[in-house]
Length: 178
Image (cartoon, rainbow, N blue to C red):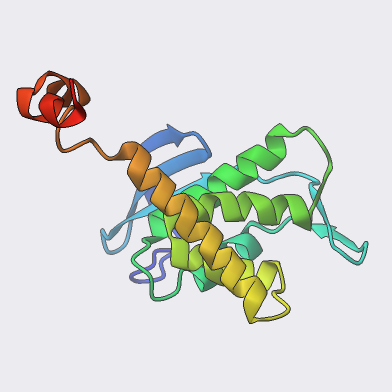
């Protein structure tokens, strides 16, 4: 493993941990002593991506990661979150047990993750992925996103006054006629 600080070819592993997507290793350069982290991922062996025009190409983790970085550019999304999304999608594709996955399936997985991660990045990705034909289509996607966000905030928001306190309050009861 090449040292990112001095370029020396040899390092030693100080710590190694398994993660759900692979192995994380802390290394130390044998020349300068610089410490750095490497990640080993299981390569999606033989997984082919079926393009919309019918072409097939080998799954590229780097291509997926690059697309996510572009969607998340200048957003408050850290590199670790992007890598987690890539790991999750890659695991999901491998878990399907198929040798091929369509760009449609991969795109939908990306959109599911981005919707939870960052909604602006989601809209950026969706505008390219869904190839919005006009501003109305773009507005529909934004409106749907706003509605889902409002529904989530309403569902997760606690009431200011608990319902049972309102039912037992004499002032509120007298207004209701009870």
